[in-house]
Length: 174
Image (cartoon, rainbow, N blue to C red; front, top):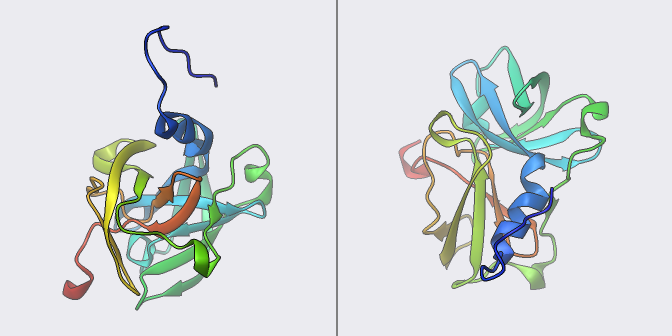
């Protein structure tokens, strides 16, 4: 999909990035509600929050408006609130894979612009833009608008890499 704007309008870097990666972000349905997730590997690995799928007997991932597929929980970490799901590998053939930031020298920094993509408030593939205000060992704080349904979706730097998973809850409250 190509972005076209009037001659006197500039298409932002964030809008271009959103169009490029949004197909790799899904709505994730567990037994107790929904959240978001992103494909991080061509073999069908999907990253989300553990609390989105915790204690779920059936997990489904909505890839687009007309496609919902089964997902299997491969691994989860309650303390870090992270879960890795697997969907059928053939479902990922045409989807953008979101890469994870992995180099310690390339970590997020305070003042950096970021985007969040998720499924807040019964919508899907919604982007919000913000700035990182604090980076700590276990948490990145930003002013990105995160609502119910955003949990599990990616927080993405402007190079298109996932730097964190968005969470709509206070981890201190459990």
